[in-house]
Image 1 (cartoon, rainbow, N blue to C red):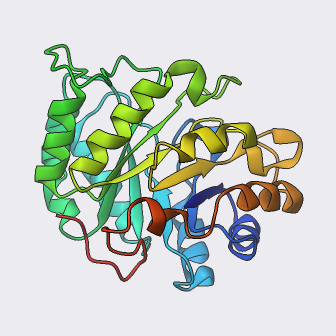
Image 2 (cartoon, one colour):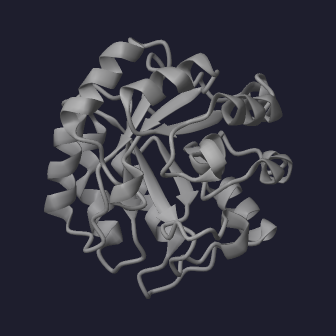
Image 3 (cartoon, rainbow, N blue to C red):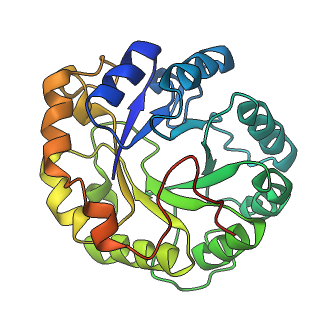
Length: 256
């Protein structure tokens, strides 16, 4: 599937009309997972009206404070979005944050976002240094999260493939998918990245810059760029690669 990150109502409607499978609300100028104002999120959710699932980010919380994270999730859940994206930095309190969000996951579908630049071990080797992806994903499953995606935090022109090789990306997708969670890949992706990433069979690929004028994530969405990316992702890609999962829609049951 194709995730399109948007920053306004106009962009949300453009992404909808352009065939995005998932409309993702965030503010690029506020960081990797910069949050849109809650009022703006509500307007977008109402305008889309259930025609596509809508996700939104809570903003960057690099200190990984469980209480701050729980409060931010609660505020975003009140907007009516279908999925809430939460950044997980490689921090000793990452697993504590996952556990703290178990209550929130009963009422909202949560997606953990880990960052490729962070020292997460994507080789499935347990570590005691706060970068144990195995331990984190197990904690996310127990907490009731719906999915995990891999993204980039530093939007400096480097792409996901500049930070992680194909084997690491494949290990990530297999690990997440094997746990019954939705898997996503993003991070300054370009059209030339799509074919290789589709071979790894994630549930969705996320885009921002590739959909914008001049390839600049801080510019507005561009119809032609959106159509170009959409054409490179087969409409039946999700069902062909992972047909055992329930449809990715607002009506689908939460993954437990």
